[in-house]
Image 1 (cartoon, one colour):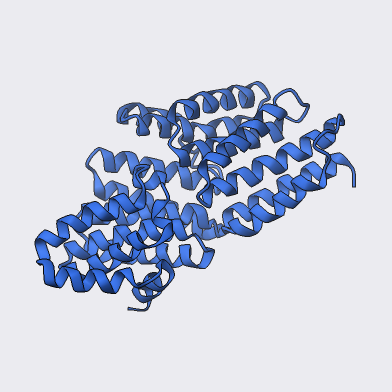
Image 2: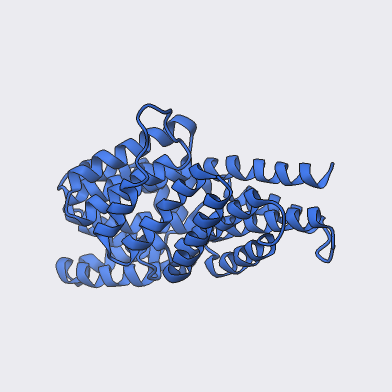
Length: 337
């Protein structure tokens, strides 16, 4: 197989493994590809193939919780591809780096890389890709609290209704617009936008975008006081995380479910869930969706509040029950019940 065909094959594998949520398999697959080619090769095609494999593996490492390693590897891959004659591979690597930086909460570098990716795409006539990268530019503004600026950026990326739906960038654009609506205190608009994102994601089985949409839908429904609807969205997200083996995502979603159940009057159950999360090694994970604070610290803070509400005896019994469970067991019980 020629170097060029290797490049196309690796890029072709990246997308389906990404949207289907086959993260563990992808990390292994691209790791094997990385090892198959000589790191010291002077051949440009080999250098491109190795960099693509490194960029892809880095993205999946980041999603699986190793954000720092993912960022470092994705950064090196993008730097390697920058002077090489494959613009599309370079753009794909930069998009992967943007996702790693988002997961790691590295806002300043995310802004720099996003702007560079847009410049490269525009210079090469890749207008669709440039418009898609506006999602990250808007996300940077949102992460920095510049709500109106984020909204204005996505106005420039509005889809032409006369054209077919954008199933790749479209769900993310809708989810970010929903986040903006939520930040503006418009939960009903956020529910509608997340719903549209979820619909697009379901059509092609984009599980990653679907999970983001479901979490946002749950948050928006909770903000609007529709707690039962929020619970349904959170539980579907938890079920998908379990199927995909994403323990960190499961732990983060369990914290949200615990908060919701406490609001619904199920405070002892909320203590069980939070104690389960805090006792598990996954509690050391930091998720961008959870404000980049260790999950265990978030669980601990909420447990203190619930102890005051429940009293020491009821709290201690619930805490003991929860601490004895792994996250996998705790999640299964929530999904069954």
